[in-house]
Length: 126
Ligand SMILES: NC(=O)C1=CN([C@@H]2O[C@H](COP(=O)(O)OP(=O)(O)OC[C@H]3O[C@@H](n4cnc5c(N)ncnc54)[C@H](OP(=O)(O)O)[C@@H]3O)[C@@H](O)[C@H]2O)C=CC1
Ligand SMILES: O=C(O)CCC(=O)C(=O)O
Image (tube, rainbow, N blue to C red; front, side):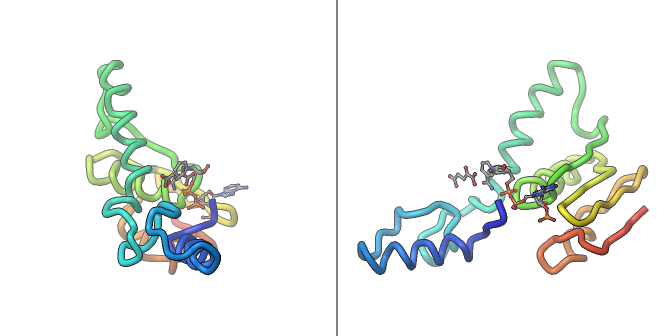
């Protein structure tokens, strides 16, 4: 947690100083350093791929449901975006220093554009 592609690039760089450049070291590297296409979204996408069949077992689909995202970081924000794209309603999202709620549904693309890194600090949307 609290890391991103830049962090992985730094770790790869440190590793390379001692062992030479090995592109297999670290996942979530920037793509131009050998990172995998789709990696940034992959875990949030996995959340959605895993929960869709679970909901189906109960006769539900994402578009019928409301969601609260506790931890709007890499995984949570991608999961929120994919819920939004499928017509589901994200009504709350939180980080360490802030939270937003909107019982009518938060516009996730707008929320993602509000913080420089998607942070929720000082954002209040009711
Ligand atoms: N990213 C990945 O591919 C994978 C992640 N995971 C796991 O998923 C979880 C989330 O990872 P990821 O999204 O990458 O992490 P991020 O660091 O990108 O996001 C973490 C989120 O949790 C919030 N948070 C952190 N600490 C607290 C706290 N004490 N109280 C409330 N909120 C908190 C952060 O708030 P704020 O936004 O304010 O910083 C942020 O919204 C972790 O447990 C990670 O190990 C597992 C497999 C793969
Ligand atoms: O990038 C990966 O393959 C795994 C990442 C992971 O498990 C994590 O970030 O906690």
